Image (cartoon, rainbow, N blue to C red; front, top):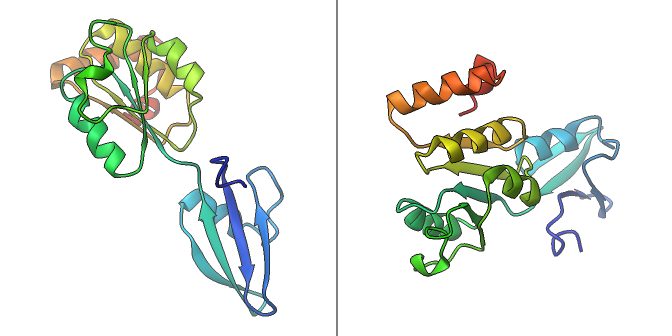
Length: 184
């Protein structure tokens, strides 16, 4: 049921005697931190606790790739991401660019809205990855600001060294630290 609902869980299987139970984030860890560690590491594995062999099957939600900017490089990026199993979401406030017809492999969702509103509606989690691609500071800087305030697993931003330098100064002016910026 949790897999069908795309909800995170860990299936805990004890071999002897054979028993199964589940753990979901937010619950107490029944194995002293082992289940939470496997979940956070995104790694299914066998462990031994008090002499018992136990298999932890980590089942995370489908990972999302959020692409800010329906630009030329987004077209192959969507294709590659879908091959890898990502849910693909393209966000661009410019309706002239945000057209599914431009994509031989269509993204799962195309959102024609400003990044701040779109990212809030998407619901960013630690299973979300983001690529910021427009080269337009009105779009990219707003997107990066929202992404840096979120738990996303990865933030990529396309741009030259000059563009990246300007971007960093803008984000520092918004109160982001070097540690925050190192996430990009």
